[in-house]
Length: 569
Image (cartoon, rainbow, N blue to C red):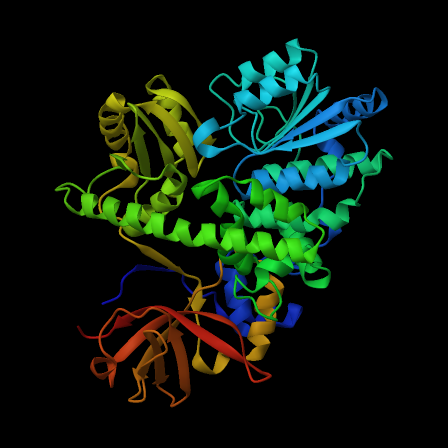
């Protein structure tokens, strides 16, 4: 019955658990969690539980940061104009807003630009480059793009325009680049943390400016919320420096939220609860992304820069409408893609899925590809065909670096780029079939046969360990997300009680008792399993997460069920 293949880590030995429990004054279940994630070094554990500004790196650790600061200082002194060029997703939009709000007022003129997905495609927009040249803009800053745009940046430099790139994408084969390159994944870069997103790099730039006395309209600390929004929204790993930046950004969102966050709070169903990384991932970021997927990204940039609450509310409604349309378009593409895959005779041994169709909306292909990956456990690329050209997005699994794979097929593409887990490609429609076959064959051995959908279990959990003490410990482990997954626990050998029932809009309220008679309960949203009557009296294991619940002013430990495994067939 269980939907997932459970991958369970063995529990740590009692001596290790006792030692961690005593030294850090944490619940035994918390100690088992740390041990399961191979966190045994006392300093590493303290750094994890108490991230602080000490975990930030000096922005001048970037090899070219000094040059970037000098370039900006020169442009200000010579009264040049500035164009900030972002991207149409949450990282590029947040980075554009961050730089604009810091640099506004320092330049003779300042313009901001985010490309149109359909009109401009990936990377720098040619029309933005042409506009900058025609207007004799003195400085051009690209954020979350620019690494692969060697020719366009060369045109800007040949026109006498200085270019700074704040990016995190992989470099093209050969590693060539132009401009003052701030990218932590550049070969030979000395910056010690490689996992910053584009906005994270832009944040380091304004920190460097602030250190050199080039004071912006706002202090960097007032803009760290945008860095958190981009870091979580772009699925950057929540480890190291990112962990501190997201913690600081969440504190800012909760202590003094900008009008955009307040305006989206109700739509994102946050209510009066503290904003978490989960709220960003599933509430705020999709709404910032939505206009760039289904229409034009301008409202998303405007809301992040808006200072008036009434205007922010108006823009939030625009984003909500776009997000509703995004959901419907994603559902259509996802359902069609899944139906086509289920018809494939070799789907269980396929190395990847590459599907193309006319009529698919290219703005939602990345999200739909991610849904396909979740469903089948294999890399997937979905492409929309228009006028003989196929354009789309791919998503991957941890075992496959999709950007490296695209490099092997670079002759097949008109344009491509991205990183290990997400890519964008443009190619001739008649080249899709050959590319699909080639990628499939390359990945069959890597992906293996029928990996299925997997659920990684961190540790076991007893019913009587589900306490507010454990919830409080888990709050110290936040923010959760990519690279620091929400802990998943297994509660073993419980008996389903007869009061188990369906509540609300199809959710399962599971009541159970363990072998010692301790009662417990969990909620499974969107239950699509057996009827409650068929569960009564069954012996099961449940995979759950634990969070802080609240009802009528009372807080309690809430279990959310991810999967259920029956005993004895």
